[in-house]
Image (cartoon, rainbow, N blue to C red):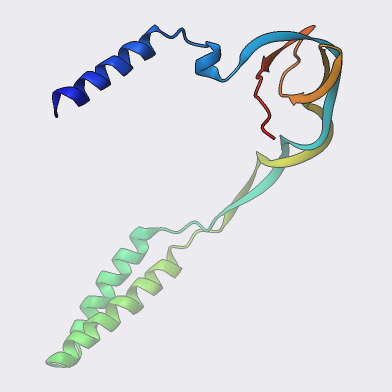
Length: 174
């Protein structure tokens, strides 16, 4: 970078540093306040969800068939031994498998206990949406007076008694 360009950048930086923040030159105008004449809330109707939990007690019937796995295991072993006595080669294997299955089913049936059932009370819950409408303030329409003239603006907050305004004077060219 040449010396002339560097000097120009340094001089511009020094000039910018001497300007106060918020000055008329830096902001494009000056600031003052104006008297607020009227503030009108801008209202909007909104639909609001209000989830609520609904619970109730419910009778639940439980049933136990009374299975005895020991009977099924013993029957399967006995059936496998009996099936193993029949056939030869791969037929012997098939007879053993078939005997095990049949023996397990018979053993399960023979040791089956009568079914028993009992009732309990259990709390069941669900979430239900309730809806309602309400009016909400979403902004403010503000009337203010500056040098005898009346102006309107919209704001997202209530301005109070005075509003800050920027005054910018620009020449008109014909």
